[in-house]
Image (cartoon, rainbow, N blue to C red; front, side, top):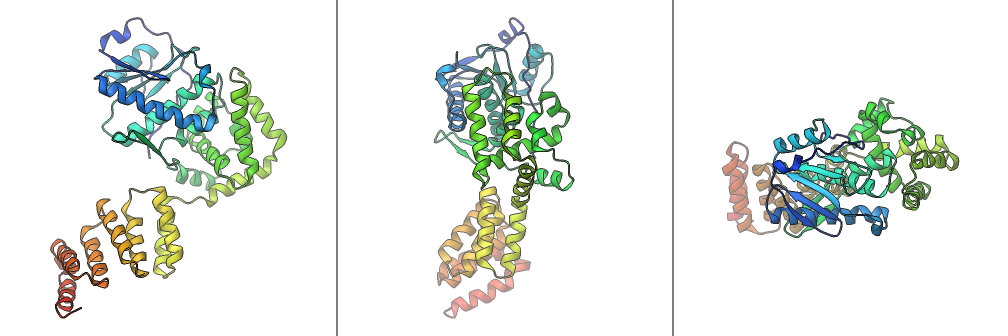
Length: 395
């Protein structure tokens, strides 16, 4: 699970000349000025990506962008060493990950990042801290659960540099942790969560982080409109009163006044309990497939793919289900996807061979079966020999 670090409004004095040690190129878009220790292409690409993130964030919050007094500043270093030197000099503290350095004015505030070899880790860190910068640019004192809950919520936003587009799936990497905390009775009440300030959240970070994300997910996805209404009322209040530093307390009081605390806590607990992790979907899908409940298994594995499209297991089982339903074209499609995602080659080629044999594509069947026998002769040589004999005999 990705390690995440909170940034709770660092207020520091910028050391004169600190950025002079590095050579930066810049790019400016509608809402950002980007400084990069690299080339113009890198700066322009990052600025364009940040604009897309800004658009995504604002589809939820609908802030009046004309209220911004200037572009948001982002500074990217080529490596962690240069990042460390800059952040240490500016803040007097070391930071393990990207950091948003906040001042009373947007013009002086900046998001400081560095290049990472791990693309997914870079994507998650950038989306997280870019959201913190985004909301702090519009709201003087956003509730901590809003700021950090949404920051985690957006962490699985992926950038395709070829098409210059974002793809967004809700980040549920904390779901398993939340479910464990729930079984251990460590989750706090909603009223407590709504009232937590930065210091309190930091002291209970192991609970606050996953629960703040889970609460955002609950409000956005609950089947009960009353909770969705609360989310949009909160956002409307932040838009209407962006300078009100008492807004977190007012939002908590609004919740207490209009919602039954006990009912809300029970509904929230039920929501968490009913959410399934990728592993749970796989386990229940395998059991349903074993029991030949193919339609039930199909639902589980399709849900698993939504949770984690890059894992081969669900795709392989979807191939088995399609084969069982005599949908050989779709089965081959799923098997090939599983192969591309790293499934066991021998067993998948054997499945492809059986599938091709069943659909009377005998030449394809020979190719797939021979590959399976070549990769794992001890396991498949005899089986392949028998099937090839049947093919030669006319199927």
